Amino acid sequence: MRQWQGIILHHSATKDSGTVSWDAIKKYHVETKGWTDIGYHCGLEYVGDAVKFQPGRSLSKDGAACVGKNATHIQICVVGDFDKDEPTDEMYRNIAHVCKNFMDAYGFGIDAIRGHFAYAPKTCPGKLFNWLKLAGFIQAM
Image (tube, rainbow, N blue to C red; front, side, top):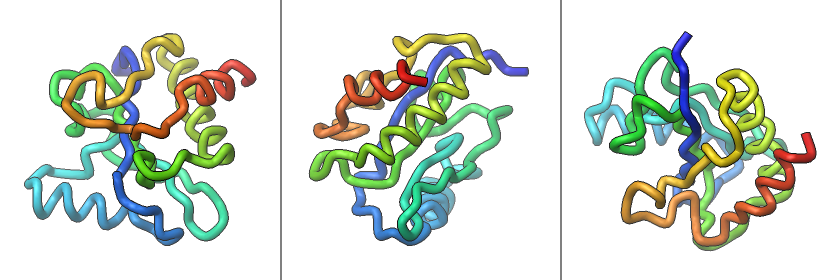
């Protein structure tokens, strides 16, 4: 089993339409960027009224969403524009659950979760993403 060192969080920087946007992201990555698959290992988005986990690129493969960290960090994308709106508490709970599962599986701590902005000139996962709120949800698990 691959030994991941942490997680890089992204946002799609698009409004979550409440329908499956994951397929459109994959299509963009493959057809426009020329990647072999979606760049993220997984994602979360609202489908109807519920947050849905979306599987992405296999964990046996490097991600393609954060240069310099693709081989060492799991890439997670949350559908939404968190420069304009903060994620809901339900979304934070779901992000926390996914992160905690990876933390437990690979033995890294909460300090190994970073935003894409730490490695590229982006705001990702968004200016309104509340890191303290996410940490609180993770610590409560």
